[in-house]
Image (tube, rainbow over all chains, first blue to last red; front, side, top):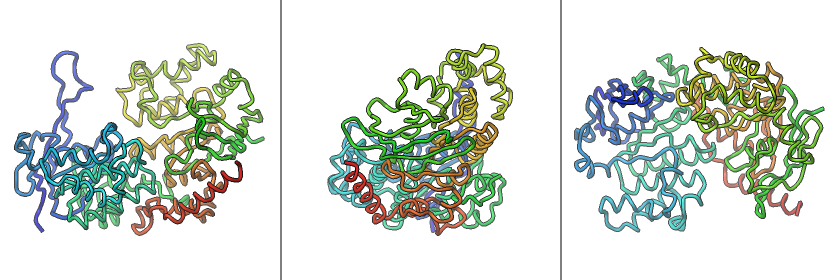
Length: 266
Length: 287
């Protein structure tokens, strides 16, 4: 199996605005401190960590919403670390993102059909209505939903629209950043089942960012645990759950409240 | 006497559909009752009704909210507010929006004690400092002078917990207090809330959609669907064997990392249809 992503010594620093003096430049803080890993084609990789661990920053670097300050990101053989926006544009179609909060990532004034069609138009694709219809079908939404507005949908349905928008471009890679953390358990299960099915049907490669290890366990074959901008564990999910090596992974696991009053929880 | 007793509480959107359907539940001092359900089930609505902070677009159409034997709904608004203000408090969901970004932490805890409950400024400040120590905030003096943006999410939530306990309320409504936090911080905060609640003997209504959390902090729970209580049970009984098909399905949807085969099953359509039929039958019966 070939690698879709090859990440070597990835570093990313951002301006620390909380420490910025009134005049002058803000100091930089390093968010990602030299990460190296690969994502093989067709893999479903989980990225977990607490708040501030750098998991979302890593995700945003993978789809080049952020430019790394060091190291390299190779996407399907191409070095995309410092590509300029015009050079990135044709590649963008191949890596797509689903956002955490569908209410703020879907334009409230556009109908669902327009929302899904917009990126297709930007990439100059043909047969847009067909592609929109196919995308809706893939995520299990009735075609009539194309004329609805986001506020008319439930949280789970909105998240399906986010997924439809991403898959409509027929990408190779999808980054899902905390996409079920705002949903209640039943919708969470539906969205995860859908994602699982789409990965298989469309041959997608998926990176799934979450702070919830129980969701990762269900979906991902491999899990990368981030702590303070460093990889503390990168192993097959089953091994990681059977015998977590890093102390931080154990903390994360033990902190999950199981639906069982008998679970000791100290 | 039961401290908080809600009897047949019905709430609806003005001129629109029902949001709560004859909800009844009790909470005693020192007890924690979980309110569980999917988004839109009405669990937060119950807490808001008790605290008298329902949005203007909804109205209470029937029932009683008995606080220490007095029906809050029959009191004149001013007396009601005074009573709720003196004996109840809220731990809100989002610690960032609940704190005023342009004020220091100290006054946000003490102003209510001074302006509304008539404490002296010195007493209120001493109390605030003691509470911050109780919620395990290191260096309370510095934090009291800090602005919200200088503190992490977990710290901000600790401050809101301290603030809720400031006037020794008899009843606290916690509205999804850990949803915005990651699991390790969630654990600290839950233990903190449970510990404070037990030490102060407070009655606690705990709104959450996470049955895992319920099993850790509550002794009783009410499962809601479409504003109707479908199951009212002790936590031990519920997790051993839920009685209602809908609440059983909700439990089956809750992820369990120890068992990859269990959990994350959507509530089956048949169960949804059945519980919807129950709601419809209820509406016909009460029409």
